[in-house]
Amino acid sequence: MKKMKALVKAKPEKGLWMDEVPVPEPGINDVMVKIKKTAICGTDLHIYMWDEWAQRTINTPMVIGHEYMGTIYKMGSGVKNLNIGDRVTGEGHIACGHCRNCRRGKKHVCQNTIGIGVNRDGAFAEYLIVPAENIIPLDDRIPDEIAALMDPFGNATHTALSFPLLGEDVLITGAGLIGSMAVGISRFAGARYIVVSDLSDARLEMAKKMGATLTINPTKGEKIEDAVKKLGMYGFDIGLEMSGSPHAFEDMIDNMYNGSKISLLGILPNTTTVHWDKIIFKALTLKGIYGREMFETWYKMEQMLITGLDISPVITHRLKVDDFMQGFEAMEEGNSGKVILDW
Ligand code: NAD
Ligand code: ZN
Image (cartoon, rainbow, N blue to C red; front, side, top):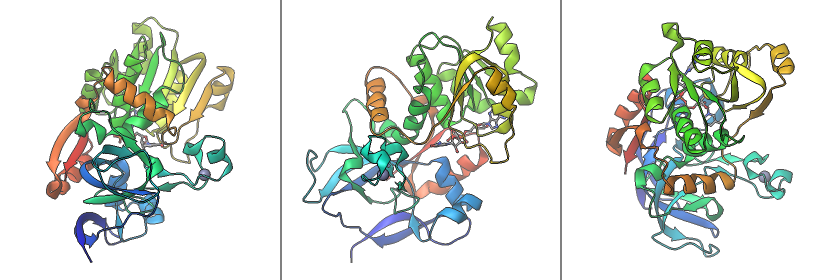
């Protein structure tokens, strides 16, 4: 049996191992992608660390990873409209195609979703098998390393574009990878002021490069309400919660304008308490965000990238895949931007 190199969660404990695994074969409607570049996601870090979520979710051994780009190496006989050699990336959630949501065009909330690199073998390997429907052909104007970021860029796009932004004042809590990309998207989509909070100055620097008007670091006594006063506002029109922190969420609710809207991407702990009276009396709209809309979010991403949105400032590490541990360590330390692994 032919073997390939892959990053495997081989054992149920902290760590990740570079292993030799059998080369997978595409089914009739599958595409086999030869991987060129991948990126490390927060989810991969959870799997590496083997936290409570990972222990509950991952069956070992599992090839992990879901942020990737490459070229089509082989295809099943049922695949249409794609060609060997095409540069591609892909949607990491595989929808079932037959549940109520799939059949009404809402595949991103499919009731039977399977995650690449979480529930089945992923992209941190020389080859990846993906259903043809999930494949996204890449425009020549999108560079390889940006193409490897399309999955989290899609989370940022789905969240940021959930409500119209033109002329609006936006508060983003959490200037991580996704929050910082959301700054660029909000700017691109015509927001007026974009205020961003994070506990890390390195992360806030990234948000500034992406176009933030003002940044707030609560660990230095800086307050979102001071930014509201400084900019002469009554409160924010749009909130993008991208930290998963209950404190940040509470702060956000306090600083929203009456009748404004919040998109929730960050995964808040189930024990989070909020002042529901404020949400009700301010008549706020809250929307939970999961993944990317299939496939409208992908269309918007492509158009933004080819008409001038530059998300490259979020990349801080470019490594050979054999140096993957350096990447995971940088992510664990918490101040890095995106880590790209070259295969
Ligand atoms: P990240 O860890 O890179 O960014 C989170 C940032 O929040 C960090 O920079 C951290 O310093 C900051 N933060 C923590 N506490 C804060 C506080 N009190 N105030 C302000 N900032 C604070 O994560 P990411 O990859 O950018 O993802 C953002 C969030 O979205 C995470 O919670 C992640 O789990 C979640 N996520 C959700 C989906 C989904 O489909 N809903 C998909 C991907 C990621
Ligand atoms: Zn479905």
